[in-house]
Image (cartoon, rainbow, N blue to C red; front, side):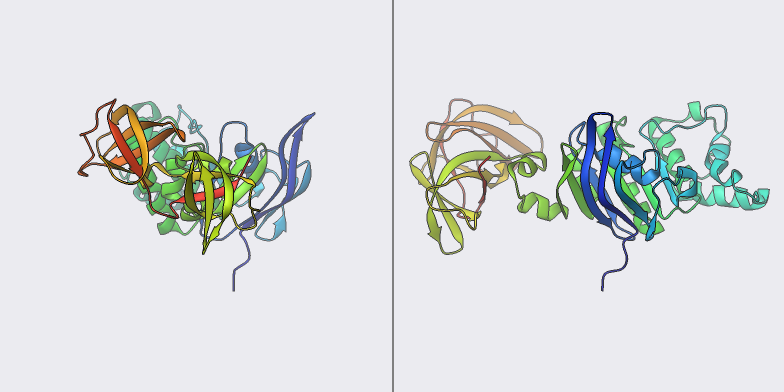
Length: 359
């Protein structure tokens, strides 16, 4: 039996004058899960987060936390804390006083010894033990982010909201912080809700991802669901990379859909309910394509070779299907052997492509 959601959005719409930022959002967030809002700039993801926090109020619909309608309830009375993109740390306070700030606003105010012990525990959780006396401007970007996290978790909120908190970090530090954040979330058992436009960040950290577009929720699911079974071209294009092939439904062969494209037949997953002769878009992930010097398959010409360390990316030109991208893992026979201009054959297994409604 599923537990009561820790937070819900019920038909939530937010307008700013004539501009609709979000429209009819329906979402149930489960206790202890790590959920991410993922989408491009202007899709409404930050507005949704700010309505959970209480910094924005819904124009229509209801925001619930722990089963209680919190419409109109200010942020400081909600059991949530938020980590902002710019961290919003106080430069005139040292690390310890920054972390203690929320506790010191409570009434009645906790004892100094209690606050000091809580600060030490919070700093230990974010791997900053002993950094209490440091000034904020003496800390690196990654350390400042940890201070902001410690300040947010010291009050043990029921929900921790994160508004693109790693946007300013370099790639390696961002990767390290993703691992630490996920570990911290498991350790605390607090519900984390993250806003990001970085698909890799969302895929690597989330239990579920909520894909947003034009102020609406487009699809919600596990990272695996969204990557393997996107319900639209928009999701397939935003979560990972894909080759999109325009085709026509020729019929079904067992569990697979047969689609005509460029004079050949491609067998794809999905497409249930599509009538014979109707247009369909096939999504084929670059890692599904194998390159061979000869044999059965699609004749292609290599136009670009991009070495990326653990894999090589090949841009291919096909007379039948146009431009394709293939990703070849390091160590395979083709990796490093194909120069621009090489004539090869692109191959993929039946069912590697996914049939999507033509848009």
